[in-house]
Image (cartoon, rainbow, N blue to C red; front, side):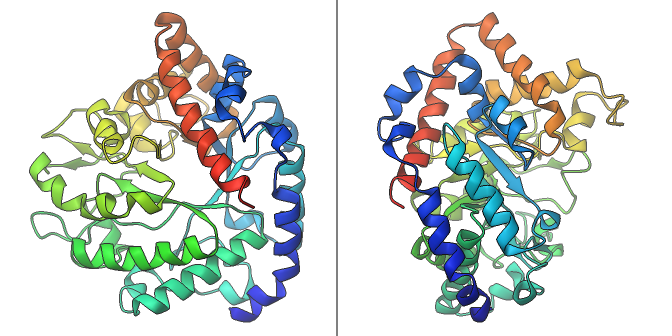
Amino acid sequence: MVKTVRSLTSFLILSLAILSPASDKGLDQPDTLLAHLSLREKIGQTFFVYHSPETFLKQNHIGGVLIMQNMIDSAGSIRKELAGIQKRAKIPLFVGIDQEGGKINRLANLHRFAKTPSGFQLASFSPERITRYARITTDTLNALAINMNLAPCVDPAFNFLGDSTFMFGRQRALGSTPDRITMRAEAFLSGIQQAHGLCILKHFPGYDTPHNSDLEPTLSDATEHHLEQYLTPFRALIPGTSGVMMNNIIYRKIDTLPAVLSPKLVQLARALSSEKIIMTDDLWAVSLRTYIHPKHLIKKEYPDSLFKKIVKLAFLAGNDVFLITFPQKVALMFEAIQEEIARDPSLETQLNASIMRILKLKRSYFMSL
C-alpha cells in the first residue's frame, strides 16, 4: 500500500497545483460570492450526485459528486478528469467517496487496495496504526483528486437492548462501546487531518437496528435518553470533521419521520455545531420511497410528486446537502426546493445559511492548498 502512495506522488503534486482555486473563484469572500449567486445556483450547490458528465454538472451548478468503485479504472484517468472539472468550475466541487474499508472499499480496483481492513478489524489496531492507515488512504484519495471521505462510521455495534446492529453485522463498527468507537475514530480522523482531507461522520444519530434502512423502513425504539449514548462519538469528534450524514431510521419514540426527514433530529445534529454541514444519505433510497408511498417502488413508475415530497421534507428538516444516486432526478429536486421557497420566501434565509456553511468549508479546504 505504501508503494501505491509513492507511485501516486507525482499525481498528488499535480492535483494540488491544478485544484488550488484562485481567489477569482470568490471563495476568499463567501458572503460576497453568495450575494452574486442566483437561486438556482444556490440550490445546485446543495446537491451531491453520482459523478456525471461535466456538462450536466455545470448546467445544474452541482456542489458535490460521489465517486464509486467502477469509476476508478485507473488512477491517472479519474484524477485528470476530476482535476479538469475542478479547474473549470465556477465554484470547486466536493468530490466524495465511501472509503471505510472492508466491505465498503471503493478503491478495490487499485492493486494495493484490493483488500482493506474493515471497521471491525481496525478496532484491533493500535491508534497509531489506524492513523497511519487513514493517512495513507487519504493521500491516495488526494492523488485521485478526491477530497472528501464519507467516513468514518461511528455507529454503535450494539443498541440499548444489547442487540447487535446492522453495522456490527457488516463489520463496519469501530468498537463495542461508545468510548472505544470514539478512540478508534479519533485516530482515523487524525490520519485524514494529517493528509489534509475532508470527512463526514455517519450515520447520525446512531444506526442501532439490525436491518438495512436503505432497503426498507426501519424502526428504532431508542428514546432521547438512549440516543445520548449513541451521540458520544459524534459530540467528541465533530470539531475535527466537516459534518455529519443523517440516517433513514425512524426513531418512533421521538418522531414518526425518518431521521433524515425529521426537523427534531436534524436540529439535534445542528446542536453539535452550527458551522458543520449536515447531509442526507441517498434520497432515492427504497426505504424513503416506501415510507412516503409503499405501492410505488419501481424507478420508472415512482410518481414525481412523491419524490418531490421526500426532497421537500429533507429541505424543511434543515439538511444542508442532499445526496442522490439517481442524477436524473436533479430536475425534480430543483423544482421541489424552488416550490417550497415560493410558498414561503423566508425559507431562502435557511438556504443561504446552508450555502454559507458549504462555501466556508470549501474556502477552508481549497484556499489552504
